[in-house]
Every structure is written in C-alpha cells, then in structure tokens.
Length: 431
Image (cartoon, rainbow, N blue to C red; front, side):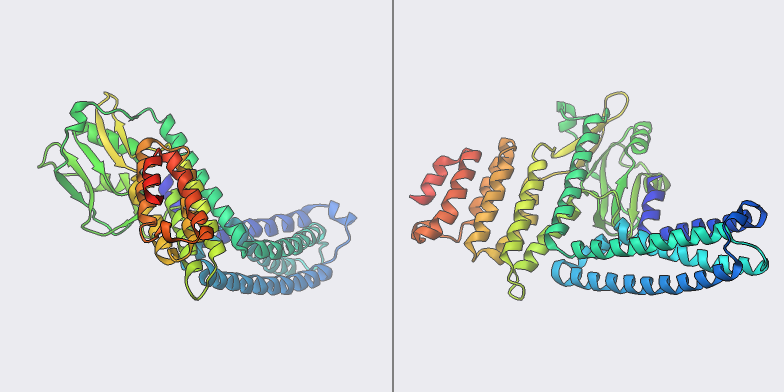
C-alpha cells in the first residue's frame, strides 16, 4: 500500500487526471438532469446563454492557467536562486499549487464537454448546468485571488523556513511515536546480541533511494530462516546497484529470495513522501551556506537557519542510536542504525562553519544552537556537542579578541560549557 501511495504522490499528473474525471462526471450528470428534469423550467437558462457563458469561462480559465503557470515558473526560479535547487519540489508538491492547476484543468474539461453535449439537444433549457458553471467560475476567481496571496507568502524566506521546520518536527514526533508504540522494538540488548558478528553481505540489486522498509514482512521472513540482519543505510539515502544493502548473521550459504527482499526494501528513483527530518535539515544547511556565499552575503538568514537546526536537533535529543526489532519469540532479528550525533553535527554544521568562520556572529549562533540542543540531551550527546564546539572555535584566539568580540563568543560558550558540564575546560580556554 505504501508503495502505491508513494508512487501516486510522486506523479503530479495523477491529481490532474483525478480532477478531469470528476468534472467530466459533473458535466454528464448535470446534462442528464437538465435533459430529464422538469424543474429546469424554473431557471430559464437557454442553450444559447449556456454556450456563450461556457466560451467566456473557458477563455477566462485559459488566461488564469497561463498566469498561474507563469507565476509558478517565476517562483521556481526564485527558489532555485535564493534558496536551493533541492527546494523546487517543495513548491511543486504543495497541495495549493497542484490543486489550483488541477481545478482549472477540470473546469476546462467541464466547459468543453458541456459545450459538446449541449449541441446534441439544442432546444433544451440547461438551467442546472448553467448554474453549476456560474458557481465553479466564481470559485475559480476566488481560488485565483487566494493563489496570488499564497505565492506572495511562499517566496518569503522566513515563511518557507518555518514551514519546513514544522514539517521536520512533525516527522520526528511521528517517528518517535511509532517507535514507542512498536512492540517489536526493544532498547536493551543482552550479551548474546551484542556479541553477534555480521560478516555476510547482501548487495542491492537496484539503484535509487531507500524510501521504506516493511519491518513486519522482513521479520517474518528472517524468523522463518533463522537469520539476523543489520541495516546501516538510513531512509531516503541513495544507494547504487552492488552496494551493501544489509549484513546478515546466520547461514552464510543462504540464498535470499530477491522478490521478498524487493518487497521489504522499497527503492525508488525519487525521495519518498514518507521522508524523515534529514531531507529538511539538509535544505536548511544549503540555504545557510548560500546565504553566506560572497555573492549573497546574508548572514541574518544563515543565523535563522542555524537557530532552526538547533531546534530540530533538540527534538532529536531523546532519539536512539539504533533500533532493535525482535520477532514473536523475543529474538533480535533486525538492527537499524538511525542516529549518530557526531556524524549529524559534522554533516550539518561543517559547511556553515567553513563559510562563516570569519564572522563571529555565525560562530555565536552555532554555539547558541549547541546550547539549545544540550539542554535536553544525554551526556554522550553533550560530549559530542562540546567536542564539535571546540572544533568550531579552534581558529579563534579568544584571549586576543577585543572586548566586544570576546563577548560574542564567551557568553554562548560559557552557557554551552555549563550545559555540557565542561566549565573546567571553558576556564582553561579563556584564561
């Protein structure tokens, strides 16, 4: 089912086809009502009036479609230039953009089909068809005005970032809830499981993005064949044919059923709609890096991205490094590595540091973000945050800074040291 839903949502034309069939059904339905109903005599709309109105409405809809499409192209250009080329799909996949175009296409289909049907019975009063045409035309005008307002908000960087962060937080909270409610997941490993060695490898037969894993089906398959596997590839990561999909422990000569593995591991040529937070956070990184480039020079936007990254990582502070799935008998069958805080910090903050290390406000923003994250992290994560903070300020001689510059670094660094329980190291750095 997930495969089907993801395929449908990844293909924009499915929504257009859906609206076309809906409005085709409306045109036939109202034609039959007008043809067979005597109630239409109370609404005196003749065939000539219907045809004139439908032609006028069709011309207006085509004009609005042209303007709407032109606006979408302008927005995509702005998204690519100001934000990141990876953000283009965000606007195209939004419900407002797709539904607006799909609605206009559906109204056009209704107009064309109603014109053809009305010619088959020229002496009939098409009262209900005309009334429905007037209603959907008024809705078209309202939708067009709303779309203009929506686009004006969409191109604002703050609105775009806030929306993306909210989606990332929703994904994280949803993922955490699923983990808590999954009875097959256990967080404590016994000695036997920790001593397992996964020496055998299964390589991918396809190239694409790993967008989903059917854990239930995979658990049953592994239990039947007395195997255990470890998956080191996170969801929405790109893999190539021949790459290691997972390592397994058990019968080294066992031949996996490729059809079963393909059904359990969904690999697509596009990132799945069931995306995790990482897709959103990497876009924030790209926006921040682009804002720090010499051609843009917008450190304020970069600081906003850093603050939002800190908020998202704070939500991840109670997540788990790995998930362990057990079968019905309680035996560990699947280990999925989900989180490595040091890797996450480096992947997300290294480029921002690289382009912004000459700006103390960027360094200060990074330290403040680390402090926010450390507030709800365990000690292992606090240690990772402090280690990366030392890496970030390694090129800064705090003792030689001007008093104004030193305040920009010392205050957030002290707050971070307090949260990470590293006050002694902080004192040695500033004295």
